[in-house]
Image (cartoon, rainbow, N blue to C red; front, side, top):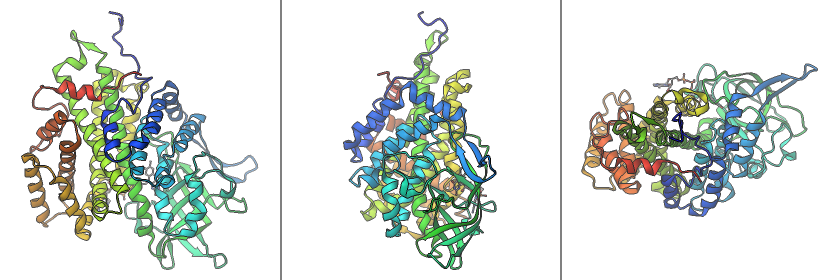
Length: 539
Ligand SMILES: Cc1cc2nc3c(=O)[nH]c(=O)nc-3n(C[C@H](O)[C@H](O)[C@H](O)COP(=O)(O)OP(=O)(O)OC[C@H]3O[C@@H](n4cnc5c(N)ncnc54)[C@H](O)[C@@H]3O)c2cc1C
């Protein structure tokens, strides 16, 4: 044996995009074949040792807060390791923060989703400011004057860090600050106050935010109570005259994961801000942003699953136990194939949703997007946690060791489910969509009833019965949304997935009690082909 210690070669020097058949097919299907070269180039970079090293370095050297300079003056800055800046430079340079706004052509959101998914496999934390900048644009567009001022800088491909007036920068990044100590999901309990300045049409904000990620962004969309109710504001970190706005970073959160990214507590001490949208319409305005960051939670979860499955299928194809490769042991085949099915369904769903963003001028697509994002956010974020844990176990002890990347994926996984509406809040949002926007439910059924598979038909009938019964429906929201998500994934797998994978997906997930654990597929036939479809290859 040429490998006496039975250790697999590291998964490096592979193209993260080219070795992902599901993503490649989805990119084309969703009308973004034109972006293939860009995503492939990014995929090549994502598989290099250098990019992988940046991911590890940025997490091993988390950001540091510097509240004051040596003279005791407040500066409220966060210092990042150079690797963070390299990751950001690539992300911004490839337009992951703005592609659809730069190139508003069919398939632009799908192209951006594919690129974000590929590059997030290197490192998840820096995706936070990238995602928030992408998502802030539709909210800002509610005020054409503000959009005209800020959007050209938000769309630029230049990563230009540092706190300076926007007019002197080549590109800017945006964050958002909604969550306060007394309530995050319930944003209407916000107490940050906005008082009109009286002079320049602006407001002065006082109060604090309990979570504010990426505080080195150039500007934030903030919720605060104006005289006319909860409103949305644009708060720049540096004022046009070059002085620092009174946005004070109190401390950085010591987080479970997402360690490369700074998440902070901030206080506003008469910070200057300008209103976005109508007074009292804060939630309605910022929800535009949240819709897009929720899509990114789905993309982030798909990306975590894909990286975990790539690592697991690679590792087990090289590691032997009891006289065989692990990937040939029947029970391991069952686990790997089951994980691969989940990853495939999630990738197709994420791309289908991104495609709905592209086609949102069509009323049915807009309705599907409304409910589809909430369903997918609820389910895929939960499944990512389980997939990563199981993929980690496929590595045995090696998976529990930091160098394998699996611990980092594992710590990152629960976050997508928490922010932008935690699990229950998303499940309840699905109910809200059904009640207030019945077209969204109709578009959902249009999607899941587009195939004739009898198992899916039965599952859809059961969902209809669940929904028709309004008694204690809130109590049953998770059960309903879980079923809706699996039926949606099944219908997408039947139409667009690998036929063998689709068959197994339906056989395992549409039966009562199915899909609760990985590695319980009903028979062995053809499962190796499912795994091979998902195993990355060296260049
Ligand atoms: C790393 C990190 C970074 C973050 N960055 C930002 C940021 O940049 N900007 C920002 O504004 N926020 C940010 N957040 C905050 C995040 O969005 C909130 O934590 C989240 O929205 C939940 O709010 P909460 O923490 O107040 O929990 P709560 O609102 O107290 O909710 C606690 C639990 O109760 C559930 N729950 C709430 N309401 C109901 C209900 N009616 N029925 C049943 N269950 C319910 C929730 O689903 C959740 O599971 C960040 C959070 C983290 C962890």
